[in-house]
Length: 181
Picture 1 (cartoon, rainbow, N blue to C red):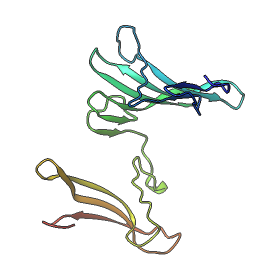
Picture 2: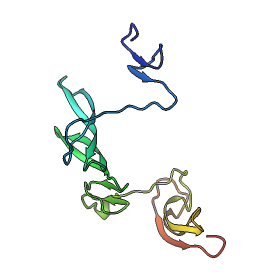
Picture 3: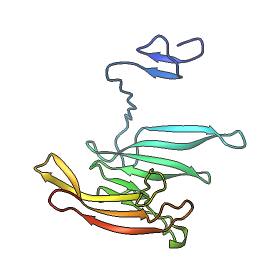
Picture 4: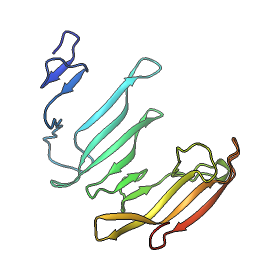
């Protein structure tokens, strides 16, 4: 422990509040109670609210579902209450807005109006505003045994011009031939 109050494990000069050094450092939070649904160790993130009160703003919870299966849940605070926002189950399924995802990715949320141009899932390109720039979703699989995967088809949302502040767009569906898109 340094004079500044920093704690070092595996180091004598920690530069952060807690610093762990080692070849493969691991931090374990162990719950020694019997397993039960929705219980387990958690990491809480706290800070002061506008009234200088300490509040839990978010949590990462390790959830014990059985002696051999666990899940991770991510919670955030809204209006004074912690709500689960995302979960990764023991099969690797991810649920956003869904605590029981039944496939690789489930996203649930309120419907967004077409007039707001905001969807439940947005795929946004970071390219500069230019003709044919925009987000894409690729759908594919393995094309050479089980080691090389590619998208076989793509769904594109693209800008149809280079004009700044002009959001005219188009939707395209593309598929591959034998060697290229």
